[in-house]
Length: 175
Length: 155
Image (cartoon, rainbow over all chains, first blue to last red; front, side):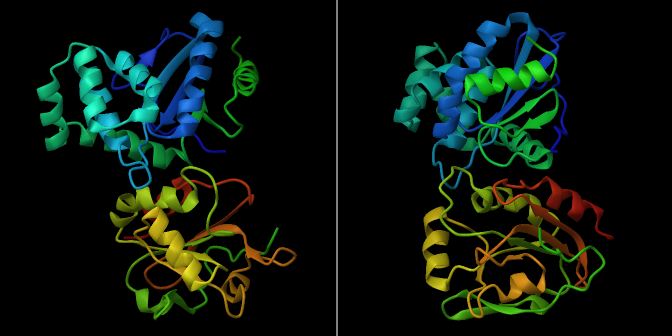
């Protein structure tokens, strides 16, 4: 059974309390339709589980099959440096079907971020290393497609429908 | 489950087509580690299937100077189309004639179905298998086992 090699740490984008009994880590790709499908599942799961659940999102862009996945990941990292990672993460998934560099710029503007600064960051790959680090840790942890979830450090090999995830979380000792 | 050749076994040599007009011999790669990734078939319908995943992880493999070879019983033209569609940057070998001949040599052919297992081999620079793994056929094994095996190769 594949295990998470990089524990959730200060570098991560995290929702929920550090002391939560369950830590769910997603390796995701903003352009992957399966990740798009999982997005509302995670929201529902967070709503139900409340303080029982800590959720971290890490980048695993499949760049060859998803041409905007890398730019989207770097855009979310750009937003993160302005304290708006989750706002951007959510906006990208909610607009997944119309991804483009133009659209990422529009989303930045909507979050009152500097559009020009984003364009420059994407052009110079300012956040490429950050994204690569996530990817590399994922590859070493046995990420085998997107999305891949880890529940308390163990890879979740089932599907990611709400009921399946809830069962897996219950089994891991959460509610 | 098949009798997968274990670590310590000399890797059986083979020559297979990598493109319609080029062949590739395993022993031609001596001097650097080789990853052999047998898989059942081209055109797996899922996002980020095994070959697409390895395509993305390629830079990590290359840090070990390792050569990645995908192998299935699909023919050269099928591989060419699949490889182009998925923008793969590593060779896919056609274990097509005799069908599954190389998969049989490595103990990873599924007789009833006529396809290869999802089986991985890491071969060291001298041509000895250093790690092998056969995944349940429906489970994409990921790249963690390969990366760990490469890390553990003697320098």
